[in-house]
Amino acid sequence: MDREPRRIIEEAIFENLGPLSTRELILMPRSRWESLRAGITDHRNGKKGLVARCVACGGQVYITTSHGRPLFAHYQGSDPWCPWYSGRNMRPDDARAAQYRGKQESDMHRRMCELIAELAGLDERVESTRVDEYLPPTESAHGRYPDVLVQWRDFGQFAIEYQMSHTFQTEVSQRCIHYDREGIPLLWVLSSFDAEHVPQAVSDVIHRHRGNAFVMDQKAVNASREQRTLVLTCHMSNGVTYDKPVLIRFDALRFPKIQLPYLEDRLTGPLLEQIKLKRLPYFHALRAWGDRMKNLPLSELEPFTERQRVDRLVAAAFSIVAEAAGKPENFASDHPNIRAMLNTFQNSGSLARYARLLTTLIKNTSQRDLLRGKVGEHLQRSITGHRLGHVEQVDEQAPEWQLLRELLPEALDPFIRRQLVDAGALPRWASEP
Ligand SMILES: [Zn+2]
Image 1 (spheres, rainbow, N blue to C red):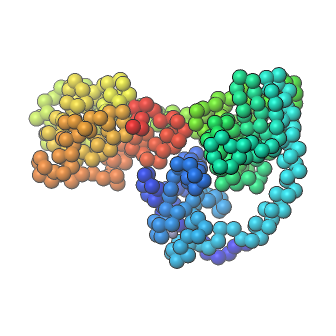
Image 2 (tube, rainbow, N blue to C red; image 1 turned 60 degrees about the vertical axis):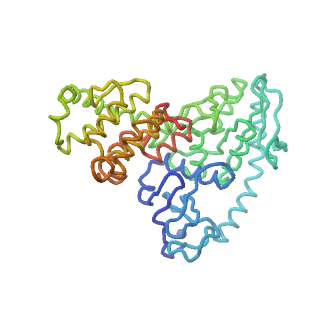
């Protein structure tokens, strides 16, 4: 056992996303940090993904789980003088053991691939199956040896990789990128699955299938023979553990434009639902609040209490989102549109200290063009303090910013935003330019 005290990387900074402390990383739900972990590995393997750096030395880091929880770790070749450097990532004994196990597993692997090919071949729509044969590339320099390649009539090629315990994230990432580039759908089939104990390498694959684990077990083999098509056992994550497994036919899967096929999206679906639930009481409260407040002339509202100011900020932010979603509703004032509302609030100074926050919000919605016109000018003037003397802008740490980030994470939480973009599930109102 490694008994040296381990030094951990306490904070990393993600390019385009921002800093993330190890504490925050550990508290993240699994699906969120797995999305980061996959993004980092994909980038390392040549796809546009994520770059994270150690705050102490600037060296690139990845997310490891070898200590039973997600932690940042330096890539090989990083600065040994970094105060958070912790030495080599794999001890030679581990490498030898992995190699030995790999040899034992390869026979079993081959047999399983042949079985999968045989079962797929029962389907009359299947034109050919190939096991471990070279597939020449169309775009990249290197071809691949897919475990099983099935040619379906009216569907085209379809690759299956059979994951044994020694298939690690790098390998998974490289294969995903390759087939993505070649435009061939890829399905990872697991050699085994135990919901009570899911090794990280397996969990990484499940994450890429949006919380779906596909297993070829005895039940699936029997069902495949009965239904004369490829049937798999599917375990779906419910965020805490896994639902009772179901048998699914290959042709019942959804094949998204980006990323791997799945039966149900168990990652972003529940996340969006959770966000919606968090927002719901605010919508109700804002409508009630608006009825009381909107009819009062502005002058009677000044000076604001802090509470009123925050209420108005939330009302303005929700109005921006409503407009961005194509369902205009002004919660904050009687102005006919958010443009007039924002201009008035910046002019009167009532929301001037939130100009930077509102600018960030608007920039991450479909309403970003507003920033090029008068609204943008007004906000900018509040930020630079040209109008009413200097107004201190609240920053990301301020409770108001945190509140809006909590309520509108699709636009204001860079990590949730990235996870949604990644899954092709960012709502239209928060769309990327
Ligand atoms: Zn470092």
